[in-house]
Amino acid sequence: MILDATAGNRTMWRYKDSEYIIYIDMEKKLEVKPTIFAVNINTPFLDKLFDTIFYDPPYGWGEGIPLYKYPDAASVPYWVSKYMNAPRYYGWDKFNNQQELIVHLYRAQKEFHRILKDDGVLWLKWNIVKIPIHRVLAIFDLWFIMLELPVKAPTQTAGKGQTYWICLMKQKRDYVQSTLF
Image (cartoon, rainbow, N blue to C red; front, top):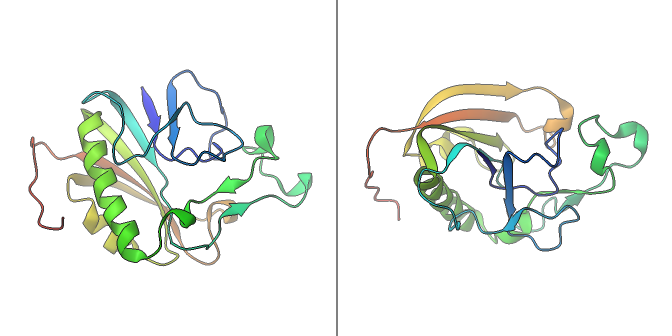
């Protein structure tokens, strides 16, 4: 079972309606509704339920880039075409400042650690818009970095910031004490 923990309008998926993916999001105004409206820091799922979690959190705070619509059909990437009229939602409006976003990232990774199977993987997408990748990875203290993939595609990059997909695996211990929060 796969969890998309920040589904938005499902714009990253080629197949938008997979029976093997649970899509969650907290935003009620999405044009493509998630499977479940939920906040990813406190999900309704049982422990160790998912094999894979995809997490594409907001990279900034404030107004930022709230929605993005492609200007015309010719500019729409093939993987967006099914929901061409559904804007990309970035979630920047949910956080007022850097501290709020960092606290959310920390709490989300703790929840993912709980609901992911011991041999499962967490795929984190991060774009260096306001916070460098090394600062974000320091927050993910319950995980081992298995793979780091820089993305070059302009459709996957906000502005000039470099985008990364990071594959993380759970550390093999029941509980990791952190002094951050």
